[in-house]
Length: 101
Image (cartoon, rainbow, N blue to C red; front, top):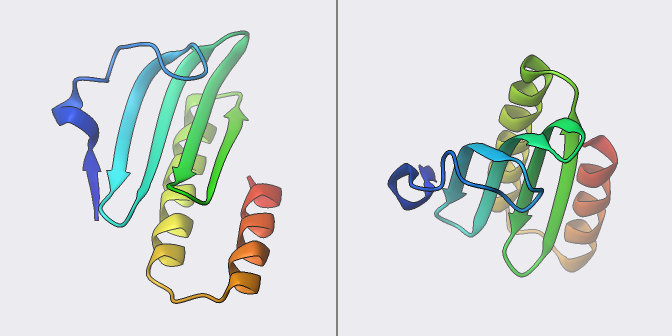
């Protein structure tokens, strides 16, 4: 289940990519995803992490593309968190995820 970080207090503040945070959510099983606008010279940045496993940032040129990636990344992460994967499967999933996004 995804919840807004700090009751939305991070919205409008500077994110890890130096952009303005538009969306910032955390999954109860240990993941976070953040959408920023105007990150350096890039229109949109999406940063996600699965605590203790990986962190990944991707970029988008338009708000529509960014929102689509954000939602798709959330779904992929949520599906992954609901599985009981082996170490090899985890490694494979991380590679596939970062190649896709």
